[in-house]
Image (cartoon, rainbow, N blue to C red; front, side, top):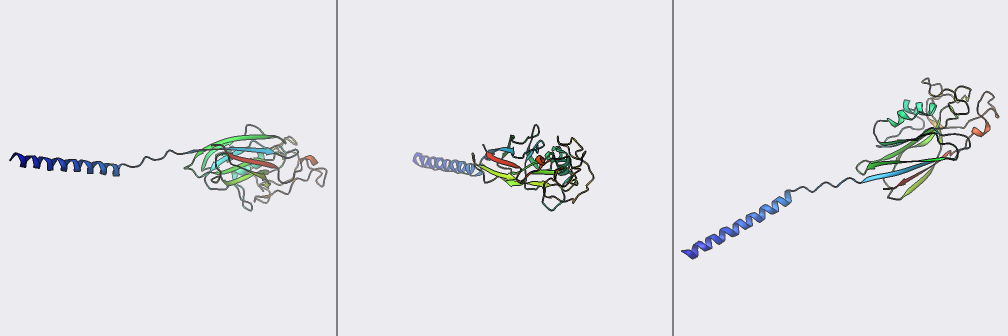
Amino acid sequence: MKLSMLRNLAVVGMGTALLAACDHNDNNRNTPEPEPEPVMLTYEVTIENISAAQPLSPVAVLLHGEQSLWQVGESASAALEVLAEGGDNSDVLATEGTLATESGSAPVGPGSNESYQLTVSDEQAAYLSVVTMLVNTNDAFTGITNKALSDLAVNDSMSMMLPVYDAGTEANSEAAGTIPGPADGGEGFNAERDDADTVSYHPGVVSSQDTLPDSVLMAEHRFDNPVARLIITRVE
């Protein structure tokens, strides 16, 4: 009798142990894996003005989703028009879909450079746009838009030369009172569009020393493409 009871107790004990082990394994299977912490990506963007006499307006630097701030052959947005005619970058920096932005603190003069740092997480597919006005023009600007950064590893850099675009929103008259830069100190943005109304590559300024006697610009204000150098480095 006593031997039988001992056997039964041993069987019950083994069953309880097995159930406990099964419950433990089930709990392990049902526990979700912790979400990995996002990795922060930091980029340094440097622009260098290589023109002779074309200051660049305070630069707008944006990391955003996949979208273009301009397209050659299409009309400039209202935000781009404001920047390209008067150098005001505030509307561009407020573009919908931006993940991080930086603004230049002042114009970038010929031969000078300025650097900016922007940080996003690896959960955000980041594309870079950089844009600034050539202030001794009617509506010329330079920059890049929708540049993918996903291939840059830490300490990797890419460098590119920047062409000059014509916003197509203001006639390139070069007339007194129409250019906001130090060559004239004239009007900046004007909502009236009186040119081709499409973005194109800029043909360059003419100047009063050539075939445009009413121009306030001189030969030194002419520019060749490219007008600036851009260096992008992933630092984190």
